Length: 250
Image 1 (cartoon, rainbow, N blue to C red):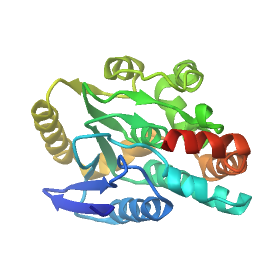
Image 2: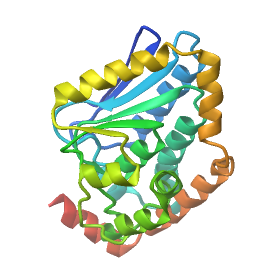
Image 3: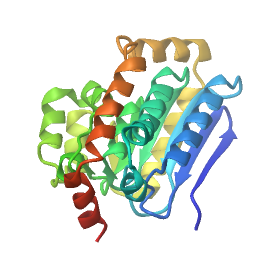
Image 4: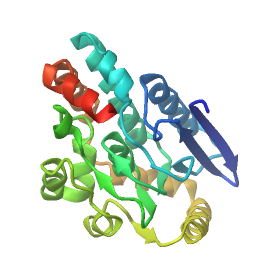
């Protein structure tokens, strides 16, 4: 079972899927590949809408790879790793195509950031969310702008300051992280397919213009997210974080 990222295009809809055997977590190489896939899809004339999903029946995304975090030995390495999440969120916001997220299971840390950077999210009842970063000695600094944009600073603070508490799918729906929640995978996928097909039937130029409107005021993220990556890169070097990561792995 190897990490994969695949893109399938049908009827002007690109479905980008990612998989990693460790809970669909992200090492830096896979972050780079997903960024490239999003950039490529954004430039394609045959794509009007993008669906972002993960594979399997477990977690949607467990966030950053703990193995790679533990391997960080200096500030440059740490900043570079967290810049992977900065790159992917910037790619999603600047992508001219609307992005629909599919959350079939739990999302942690960077996984929550990915869902927040989607323009619309379909989720299953099992898709609880958590920002666990403070518990391991860092913080959700890179993804904070995207999460706060979607659910507001108050809800963002609630998640961040309760790093061991899961928020259920209905909470995420109420706060605006999720757009629709379904009790079965069949209903989730059926409604997602119908929504994507309808969206892809609209004027492509109108969709591109709408995407720009939805992300107005985020132009400073080109620098902000990398400043935040440097904060996380510094904190991950601390003994507190190294010990906490080892405990989490156990």
